[in-house]
Structure formats: C-alpha cells, structure tokens
Length: 139
Figure 1 (cartoon, helix red, strand yellow):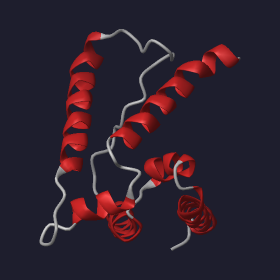
Figure 2 (cartoon, helix red, strand yellow):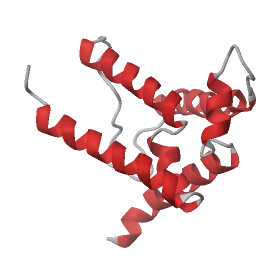
Figure 3 (cartoon, helix red, strand yellow):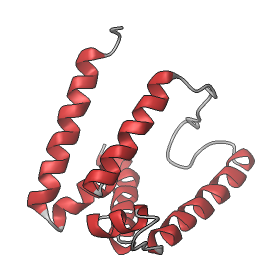
Figure 4 (cartoon, one colour):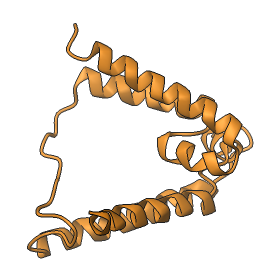
C-alpha cells in the first residue's frame, strides 16, 4: 500500500521544491510578477516557461505510451467547453492570487517557510472549498 503512494509523494515533494526554488512561495515575488505597470519582476516567467516545456514534452510523449508507469490508464481531460462556472472560478482564482500572492500549491508549500501567513491563506482556501461543496448543484 505504501509503495503505491511513493510516486505521488515523490512528485509532490519535487513539485513543492520546484515551487520554492522558483520563488512561487514568496507572495512579494508573485505580486511583483503580476504588477505589469509598476516594478515588474519577470523571474516567474521562467518558472512558467519551464512548466510549459515539461508539459509540452509530456503531451508529446503520452500518445507513444501504452499506459502510465504508475497507473492503470491515463486520466486526460475530455471537455473543451467554457462554462460560466469555469470562467467565474478562474476569475476568483486570479483575484485571490493577486491579493494573496499565493495559489493552492505554493500556499501549501509555503507552510514550511512562513507557517503563520501561509496558514491563514490555506485556512481561507479550505473554507472556500467547503462553501463550494455546500453550494454545488444549487442555482
């Protein structure tokens, strides 16, 4: 059972380390990147560029594989439509990212660096997720 979870743990640790080394866990750096008309900090563009290159390689390699190494099958998105819920959620994500300077992955990784401020963000994120679960399916 534990051996089956090791690849996920290793991926999470690698992801968190990459976010930390790339500066994504520093809210001031993220806000500097988002401040296009002020004191713009372009360093996160390189982090995002690296992520795009890794995903481009993964999308190129995936059709050549019969199945994933650590799973029974691939879990790929099938829907291509834009819904009001998706657009609204994306807008809320962007607003929250701009205000807090953190998003979910870096927020959790930041718990190891700045536990108090990151804990406030993570608690607010979890509360928002709880509210969505309560209201899903309504309206």
